[in-house]
Image 1 (cartoon, rainbow, N blue to C red):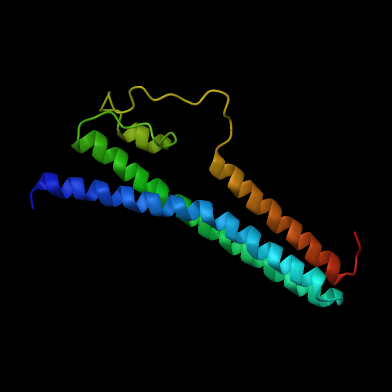
Image 2: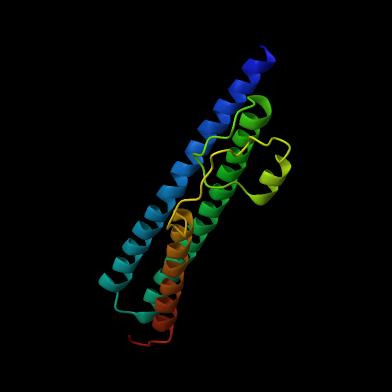
Length: 160
């Protein structure tokens, strides 16, 4: 296997891994909302005991938090794959990095400053101030907090 074939193979593998992680990132919040909805239905539809409701809602909050951690882990790994792909594009293929990903991290941009063409033509989207992944994170945090509030209110028999 030649060096070029190896580099192309690495690039393809990074692309596959990034696609798998990105796919999982978008599925995790759906799973969290589904699990939470099912546990809320279980808590309020099938039991009248506040303490049991509190336990079920606490389980829902914990699962949501665990899925939040998993989603962040996948976001970290997809970012690493994207960085590898950008480095391969710029250092090995000697081309301007394709603008298919969000803007790279500051360190990556600084590391590739010797390649003046690395980020030619990259533009920041106009009017978009918050990323979709950040919105997913905020939604998961809000869900966890709401579930904890419901759990605490059931433990102390507070009615909302």
